[in-house]
Amino acid sequence: MTGQVTGHAILENVRRYRGIASLYRQTAAFRPGQSWSLLEQARDWEARALLELESYFAARMDYAATRPA
Image: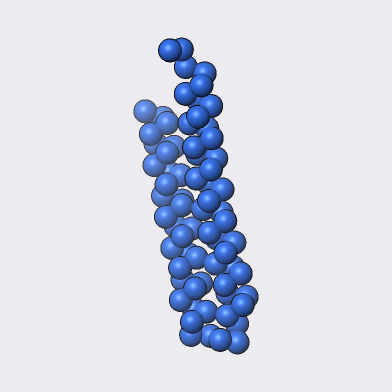
């Protein structure tokens, strides 16, 4: 049960991070003078989301590897 709650929380974080990245990209479309900076911030948020997913699946793989067959 604890793994499911943790998994749900991680996926919620990923959703939030990607939402923030999307807002930065949208803002960049309306602020050409700041677009490079805004797009860089969007990439940073997408990278956070990816790291969160990678750590989640790595932890699941480690857990599955330690369980007896």
